[in-house]
Amino acid sequence: MDSSSCRVSPSSATSLEFPGRTAELGRVRAVLRDFLADTADDETSAQIVLAVDEACTNIIRHALAGDSKPVRLACELSGDRLKIVLRDYGTPCDPERIKGRDLNEIRPGGLGVHIIQRVFDHVEYEPLADGTRLTLERTL
Image (cartoon, rainbow, N blue to C red; front, side, top):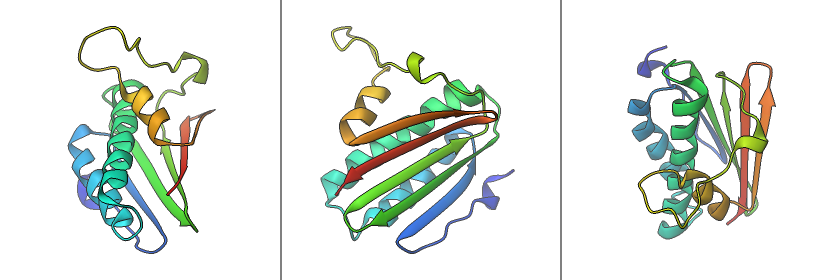
């Protein structure tokens, strides 16, 4: 799948399918910013975009491990409740093994899980036979 096959559909819901490559993350961030433009203030939008970018980076790095299988992003706004679902087709993850690094350890990287958990009210990792579904929810 090449980057020209990404699909975006506007409304109170949007979706995007993209190849699992870090080069695609700019598109993911742009879709999220556009989706949140009329519903979240700039700071909240920036936090959500950062957290989803971290989640996508983890999927690409760990679940796909260099394989550019597709990743699906689905965003839905119902009232003031935002729901974002990321679905990958890589190696399923064990939710018990998903932990951020010790915050007292000074080094770059490893903060994605902390950022995701701080930005979203509800975080659910669901291992599937052919990948993982990550559901992120928060009230805006």
